[in-house]
Length: 360
Image (tube, rainbow, N blue to C red; front, side, top):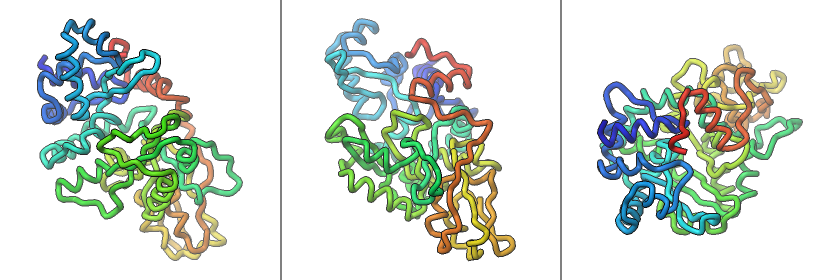
């Protein structure tokens, strides 16, 4: 097993998954991102993170050389690093492929990598999106929610931003990937919101992220809603640090979901659009807003396909008659969103029948 095969196997042990594809595109992607030496080192890291001293001791490598190699890998978006208060030192850890290594290639990606990723999204990524618990949870547009609903804070994008201490915005890597292969997105492209709950100036030294204010983040969220983009975040009840504003033409997850006959089965959502037939005039204004083709006007009244609607609410905010609103409609076969990241990873590992204990 060469270093790329070893790294691919390690990444697929992570509950997120990095499934192999028959034509070997998954290995060619790793060859583009990593040198053989970098792939070998990455495959030996742990998800929990280790200090330089711990790593040097476990891998039997000189600290100075190891630190230099790790710093280069951080700059190339291959691994994660942070200052641990409990350890009093920097820790280095393995990253999942998605969400993780893929997103960190924003500053490096070229047409060659973009085309390989496009191929991989069509085959390998479908396996990632089809496993429970799913990665993405749809966060509804707040103003489209029925007024009598009791909505949890983690179901409100505005509340997540209000509770943060730092805010930033990134160019959407999915939209950049499509643009590089000659399929530019018609939606706004710098729309990926990141935030930190307890750390001020969290993105000060992040070259891929532009630091913005809370007010700017809320405006960007509103602009994304008005443009018709879908709010998505991590499928947990706590620990959120990003809101993706997604489209079915570019987003790796939503592209795969939209290609299925029943998109609602493959994404976590607790809402469904409801139509007040007394108010609906059948004007069809909402039809173009729905990226999942869940709405139709067969006989002068709008009708929703409950198996295609993902409960995002972007259609409701353009209805001139206010006839559309979101109601709570949890899918009986969908488990509640896991409490936190560890809970999500545990459930996902069980679902995928993988044992990540040796990389934890």
